[in-house]
Image (cartoon, rainbow, N blue to C red):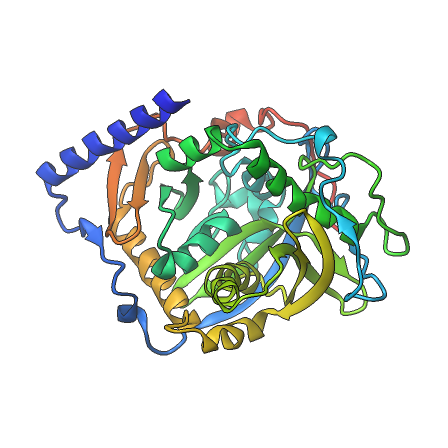
Length: 403
């Protein structure tokens, strides 16, 4: 895997060198990220996002066009006196292989079985002619990719690598692991791996399979199952359809909820780091689909949660204002808007087999490379782009109506 990471980086470097010499006509060669103050100003128009569907992935990662994997929030009576030992069950954790890339396949499966949701009023699916039909949507991607974009102006540690393919007028975006991310995963210690497990175990303590039931913390934890919301939104001139895994639903407030863990805060520097690095990611992840709140379990170094605290998504920027040089949500959204405009300027060829790779590292500009048909970065499968391949998605595909 290390050699694979090195080969990928070398491949991108060679392509970048080729692009420099060819000097793409009429297209910007790079996008400047810093200083972040260049994105200051009025908060851009972001239309109230709307849920347009959902899907579930079962214990075998089979796709279902329904809510079968939706979990329900279970709040303890006393949030200041809980005792969740997140280390329990780690040895029998059923963990997915993070090196296996899913690309955006499950979102594409959802699009295929919900094509009518993309038709214009009065438009007939049969007469549309395209397969899948013209989505009348600028960008399709996972929510996590957009979250990463919103945080980019303030990110000082991790870079990113994003592939973009234009097909039937829509820009499909897919995140790839950077060589550094691959190396980090391959050298992860047992302690680090266990701490990743703690987040999943916390979710098990906080959710129930049915609205009127209680959590079952005795069964082994698995991160194979998932419930995902599909959301439609608009950021200024860019129409968006994105999907993201959602933790649970609160029947009392009638809203979806995100669940997080964080280390207990005792020192001023811990408080600053929490507000600077965690809250921005929580805000970005929850603001995009209009999830109104995040419930955090504060844990000690032994993985025991003793207190829960609720953070309202719209309050998070104000909570972070008391730190030096706080992050600004307008900067995050303005950056995302301008980056999406940059993508439209660069990605000219409408071809599902051609991929444009956008690369960024902290304190650097965003650069891009164009990769020819059927390169190793091609991510739109033939079962999505070729009508003759429909139904050959390599996964069980339940097409029952989404409830």
